[in-house]
Image (cartoon, rainbow, N blue to C red; front, side, top):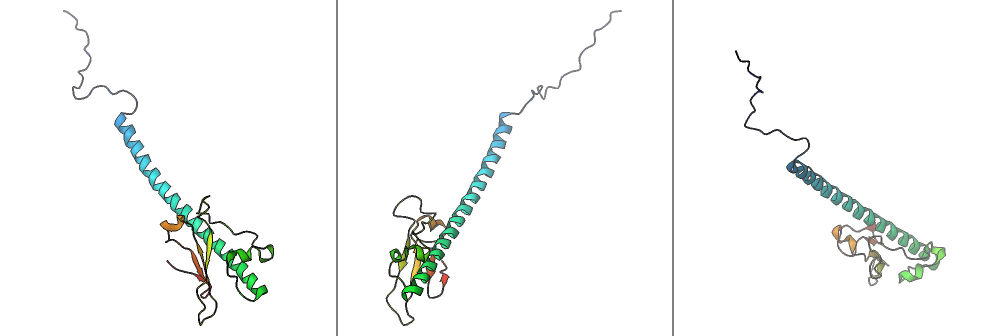
Length: 154
């Protein structure tokens, strides 16, 4: 009798043997998920940065208001321009710049609006001219009203 040689088990015809590693589709899927997560995270950090700049701008307006109050305590009236409070004795050697204004000379300054005299007495409004607050608030905000001693809501 003839001895038969052992035969290997039959291969499944449904699948070819798989090589080690990841397929291109799997790698593209993971990269797509990472890109989506990255976009969400960057958007969140931009909004936090904008909020921080807005709060720093409000703090600068408070400093300017304090210098105006020191000016009033000495001169007995409020200044008509912000240039009048730029002295060391008022605690403001120079006007602070808005952090959202960048280096552009026309942006990032603060303004003083003095309406005509009214029955309530002298009032003024301090505001920011920075353009980068527009995503959070309209132009000219934050605004501080001396009559109410509060920041105006937008």
